[in-house]
Image 1 (cartoon, one colour):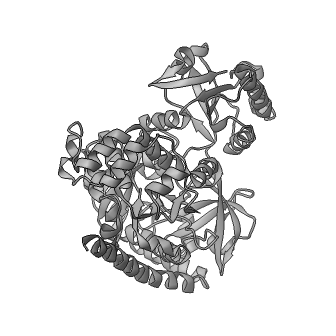
Image 2 (image 1 turned 90 degrees about the vertical axis):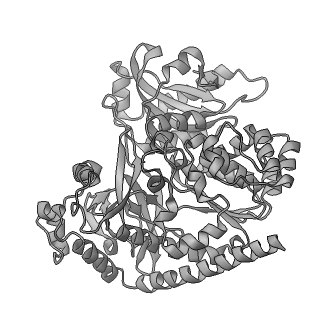
Amino acid sequence: MKAALKHAVVMACHWASGYMSNKEEVRYVASSHNIKETQEKVLEGVLERLEGTESAAVHNINGNASYEYFKKHFLVSDYSDWQEMIEYQRSGAVSVLTNTPCMRYQPTSGSTSKIKWIPYNHEFLEQLNLAVGPWLSNMYKQYPEIKKGKHYWSLSWVPTEMRNVDSESVNNDLKLLPWWKRLFMSFTMAVPEDVSLAESSEESLFATACYLVSCDDLSFISVWSPTFLMGLLDLIKDNRMHIARVLEQGQWPKYYPSLSSIKAPMNKRAAGTLLKWDGIINPRFTEFVWPKLALISAWDTSSSKVWADKIKVLFAHADFQGKGLWATEGAVTIPYGHNFPLTFTSHFYEFENLDTNEVLTSWMLKEGMQVKPILTTANGLIRYALKDRLEVTGFLNQVPCFTFMGRLDGIDLVGEKLSPDVASHIISYVNGIKGITAVTLLGVPNIEAENDGAGYVLLCEGRQVGKNIDHDAFLNKIKNEVEGMLQQHFHYQLAREVGQLQVVKILMLEDAVKFYEDGKVEEGMTRGNIKIEPLSLWRGEIDKVFSDEKKDGIEVEHVI
C-alpha cells in the first residue's frame, strides 16, 4: 500500500508538472509567429535592468535605447570584458551589472584553467525557466512513459575543493527552478538533492550510484555528457559489493562520513542483483536494473556522438534524446520534436555569420548559415559571445532551428593554427577502424619525455585490436595516416618542417575517457559537465605516461 501511494504521488506530480509546463509551451509556440517583436521586448527588459548601474554609466546607455544605439555602445564581448565588474559585484557592491540583487555565482570553466563566475539573479533564472518549460512539456508528450517513474537530473557538479565555499548556493541546482517545479521535482527525483552537498565528489558520486541502483522505477535520465553516464556505470561495476552492502543494510560506509546526514537507500532485491552480477555492463544488465527506463537525454552531436552511440547500445530498451545547446551563461536551443529551435523567449540573441563576420539578429538568419551565438541576458552580461559553431537547419514558424557543429576554439601552439574541424575529421576517420576509438586530439605544449618539444597526441581508447595482429604496426599505420592528414594543413606542415612540432603520437589507454576527465578536473572543470572536445589544449602531465607507461593507475595499452 505504501509503495502504491508513493507511485500515485509521483504520477500526480508528473501530471501537474506537465500541465504547468504546457502553458509555457503554448506561449512559446504562440510567440514563434512574431520573433522580432518578442526579441525586442526581451532586449527592452534587459536594458531596463541596466538603469542606474555602473555598467550603464560606463557604456552611456539607458532603458530607452534603440537596437542600433545598443550595438554602438556595447561591443561583442567575452568573460574577460566583464571579469572586473563581476569580481567587484561578488565583493558586495550593488548595482554593478544590474539593478537587481544577485542570488548566486555559478562556476564554470572553458578551454583555460581559469574559473569563470557567472552571476545568477532572479530575472536570469526566470529566463532559463522560460526555456525549460517548452522542452519539458514537449518531452512529456513525445515520451509519455517518463511520467510513470522517477527522474535523475545531473545538473551542476563542482570540484571537491569548492564544496565548502558557499556550497549550497553552488551545488543546489533546484534553486534554479521556480517553487512549483522544485516541489514537484522533490517527489520525482531518483537521487535526493542533499547528495550534491556531500563534502567530496567521490562521496556524491558513490551516493548517486547507490540511489540509482536502488530505483526500480527510474524512467528518465538527464545528463550532459554521455561519458558521465558511462562513468557512473563503471563506478557501479567497480563498487558493486560496497553498493550492495549499502542497499542491504540501509547504511552508508563509515569511510564516507559526510553522507551520515543523508538517508541511505535500501533495496534488498537490487542488492541481490549486484551480488550475482558478473560485472559485465551490457543491455541485459541495464534493462534488468532499470526496466522502466524510457528516455535518456544527453549530448549526441560533434565529438559526443561516438559516446552517445555507445549509450544507445548499452540502454537499447530506452529512447534517446539529444540535448539542446546550453551554457552556464545562458540557453540557446532546446530539443523540440525533431528540431532544436532557438530559446527566443529567454534572452536577446545575435549571431555572427562565420562566413562574412556580419552580426545578425535572429530574425535575419537564413537556412544554411553557419553562425556563432551572441547572448544578452538579464544577469548583465551584454553581447556575450559563445565559442560554438551552429548551422541554421530550418525554422519553427519564424524561429530558427540549429544543429550544433562543434566548438570554435582552435589551438595554436607554435603558429600551426589547428581547428576543431580538422580534429573532428581525423577522429571520424580513426573511429571507422575496428578495434580503436579516438577520443580527442590533444595539443601538448611540452612533452618533457620527448626532448622538451610541443606536439599533438591522438588519445584513443581500446585494448587488444585483434588476434594475430602486430599492434605496434597497426598503431604506426594509424599514426602515419593521421600525420599525413595533419600535414595537409599548411601551417602545421611548416611547423613540422622547421622542427617546431614533433610528429603526432598515438596514445591508447584502456580508460582514455577517465584520463581525459581527470586532467580536466585538475584544471578546475567539473566532472559532470565535461564535454570531450575534438581538439583540446592539454595542461596536465602527459610525459609520465610516455616514460613510465602508467598514469594514476591507468594502464597504457600502447604508446606510438
